[in-house]
Image: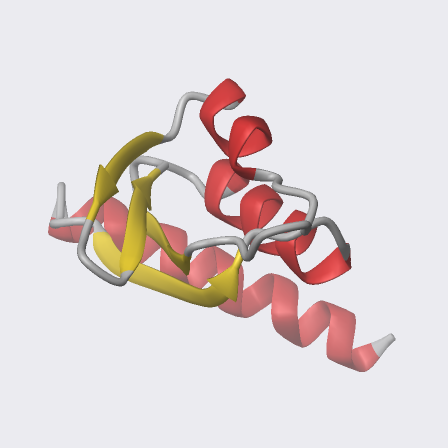
Length: 95
């Protein structure tokens, strides 16, 4: 119980500091995964990139290309509104 109260107090301090400091630039996060083949790690990467608060974080998902014969979760990422930018060896998807 003590940890929960301690965490709550820290969150309140963080919010109070944010109000005092005013708007700050979002924290940039680049999440890298080898490829978006079908599976738990791909789902996890897509969900995390999609659900982070856009006011506090600027999140991108960087992934390699899916191999022949593998299922591809790229359409799932695109359906969530990610923008796709292709590179020679990987794809950068901005959430």
